Amino acid sequence: MTEMATTEVEHRRGQLAALSIAAVVIVVGVPLWWKTTETYRAWLPVSQIQELAKLELQLSADVEVVFARGTVPPEQQKKMPLTQTQEEDHAVDEDTALKYRYETRYRTATVMEEDALNKPTAAEADLALHMLSESPCGSLVIYVIPESSSQLPQDADVYIGQRRTALLRVVEQMRAAKTLEQLLHHLQPQIKQVLRVMSFSRADITAALSDRVRFHPGSKESVADSMRAFKSSPGYEITFSLLNPDPKSHRLYWDIEGAAQTYIQPLLTKMSPVANFSIDSQTLHYTMLGVNPRYDASRGAYTLNADSLAHVINPVEARLGSNAASSNPVLNFLLYVPDAHHSPLYIQDHHKQEVPSNAFHSPRWGGIMVYNVDGYYETEAEFPVDININMAKVMGVFLAQLRLLLGVQSSPPPTGFLVAPCGSTGLADWELDRLMWSRSVENIATATTTITSLAQLLDQIGNIVINDNIAEQVSSAVASLQLAVAELEAGNLGFALQFSKEAILASEKAFFDPSLLHLLYFPDDQKFAIYIPLFLPMCVPILLSLLKIASEARQKRREKQAKKD
Image 1: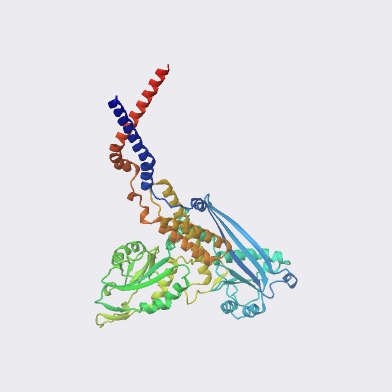
Image 2: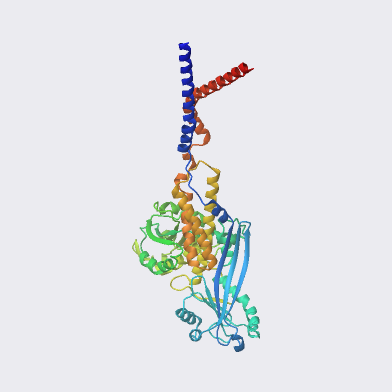
């Protein structure tokens, strides 16, 4: 009897031990294992990112139309100042919609503005008006001058200045208007033309959305225009290289430092709101173009035709080197001085005509200029010949190429428009504004595409770790995007560009974070392959004990039921 009681106690103790172990495993072990092995995923503003996926932008510009003396009848001047708002919708695709908003204020000129408009030339009037007041970034002022004004030549009705002002001559239809409403009605077409030249245009903004929307340009020219300029970037590196294929023929001297300060730096300083720039230079000896020029006996010169220019860059690019410490795009400008045996060397276009600048540029890469020095080779010249390069001539070509590669549009103005030269800075104020409009929209489009793609990636692959720093960068990008969109809508172009740059930096930093590489983490099938050999030997005895306890409990229940019956 005692032995049976002892056996029963031991049996009961074994059951309790098995139940205790199972309880500890289920209540403590499994949650602890689950918690310690789960993928950490910080919170992301998913709802705000989904709102950004459907992009709706409003571009707002303030326009002021100022009527000079003699352009508006005295009785109609009492109706001014007058403000009108015009809006234009532009549905790009189902996920992208734009709205262009112009708030135009009409008023008469002040006494000081009248004095400035009485200057003998349009350029002097433009400078005098600028000295009176400087228009905010993104805004325009259009001065309507009498038809009898001598500031514009007879074949020009509109003068586009270096700043944010334009002079518009009254035409016959406006002069015939009897009411202010009729005058403004006849004035609208010309104002719209001025806005298309000096402010944002539908073509520029559409091209800026190329990262977000796929377009089908209608001609080869439009394809080339859309691909010529570099994509928006926080910074650019500009490299000037002097290629001397034959140092035995000539020793070349170029004051690249002074020339860059004189001709290039003013442009880069003015474009500092758009991006940061760095300049370096180098001289490469024994560097050939990689294409053998053809000798043209009729001209007594060597030529490079347009079809061979595409093969010039690759051999030269291998010698240029690169800055591994920077990820910014590099703009290469090469000055090639042919050796004595291939001089002079001229570049021909597709029509077999010599290119006046003797230079060409490659989209999103840079430009090359051929600088002939055959005039220095006299009959009894001693080699190597010392040659000082005319940097004014060279920098004029490189400056024009730099403007194109940075996205400064230089399309021909409409008929009747006279555009002032851009001055010593190489860039007019309204050209900078146009570039800032395009860059702001491009940055917003790129950042929204990057951040929505990242959100979709993280949603599809559940075992990617989302660290706190990534969540912080995503939240920062979303906040900057929202601010950039709001500033664009308010017409604050400078702030909109700054916030859009912050958004694209934060979004790309989050997207390319090394911790997001999902190959660093085990997929589910590999997890099972690791954990089953570890947990199966432990779980089988516990599971069998639980099954045995359950079986004995059912057996006892049946025995009790039989006794009752």
